[in-house]
Image (cartoon, rainbow, N blue to C red):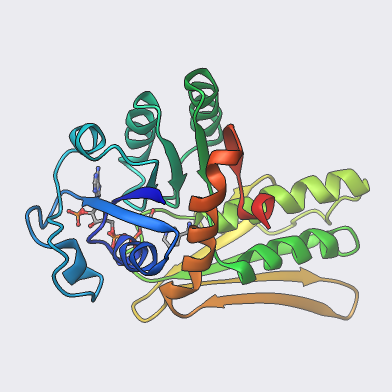
Length: 265
Ligand code: NAP
């Protein structure tokens, strides 16, 4: 049985992870950590009722006391880099769903994990459909290089653009480069800052933040007299759980850094 500790256990994603781990016969939930709701039962936030598992403060102390095999982190873009360093320093494997890590930070964490002989897995999106959306987009980009991304999320999301949109742009740019094709130049004169969105690897991303949304993305390809839109919608956070559980079970077999769920599929 793999022992799993959930960081951010009272959050929207963390509470779902608590339930998914608890429900899996091959995993043992050993605890939950957060900043708020310390002392309250982690099971209540997960809709499981009382588990006799009070939410703890302090990731380092929880690691010392509970000795998990894997930590799953769904906390905050501001906290994730330090959280990951703490987990790796303790020699524990880690699954990171929290977005906001830069490429440099990921590389640094990967090196640290290699030095400590641990594994860290980071995925901007644990949804199978979202991974397929990215994969299909890279195929299409080889034929239709003119592309923009619109991502739509709930209004409590702290980072923009989303990690999924950044990863999609990175992968499309790499596919375009490999295919040796260039997009048409953008001739727009931007009369208002931000009107044309943000650029990631030369690809425009527009971020929408509204109540009612969960996690959605459209990848729009323009052609001559035609356009193609690839759209993915996560309408329930449960959609991420099979990917999270898969990552928890596989992370230990992939030393150092692994980035992206496609590596485990
Ligand atoms: P959320 O509901 O705000 O939950 C985050 C939880 O973490 C909160 O309870 C928060 O406590 C706690 N927290 C914050 N900093 C912490 C720290 N340093 N140590 C321990 N706990 C801490 O957010 P969410 O919607 O679950 O999203 C969490 C992250 O996952 C975001 O980065 C989001 O973009 C990402 N996400 C990723 C995926 C994916 O598939 N990879 C899918 C959805 C979301 P407080 O309330 O006290 O701040």
